[in-house]
Image (cartoon, rainbow, N blue to C red):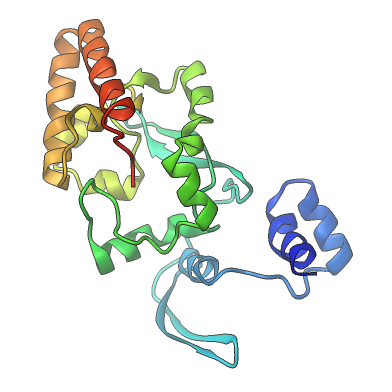
Length: 240
């Protein structure tokens, strides 16, 4: 019964096509949402969470509205998602990935950053937005496979700086922001060649790569490709 309930109330509403069937059957009643999705929905509507408490297996929360809604009408909440990322010349590109976070998690990035800052490798420690299966996808690189489509369309290349969200991009110094948009983002970032630990080291790593790339594009990408491949295959470098 649990499996059927899980598929009907959690999976169907997220999958295109099945979503219409779900609302036809249930009229939207008794829809199951994860705690993270609830907070993300609140945030995208302009609310911030004040407090929450679980009482008798029911989640109660208090939120106040602090800003205008920032809902993305083109967002995708199924297993295959499209994320807004800063591309070449500052253009916003839609990067394809397999979902590793709960729906509406992208609206919580700034909130999580304020609460936790960044850990080693430039990621959040114990990020509550990542689902169990999402963690497996990340460890096995499965989540980034759809980005091959972006590579085929010419929006990204094989080696290049990581395509960043606008919030993450805003954390970079302005000089590096301007430098980043001179090249296309890449599927394999210089991170895996240099293995930096802090955000400052990540920024410095990307800055070195871009300066080298602008002088010798082909040679630079070849060098970084083989160095990153060695770290990934031999040293088991992974994105956390």
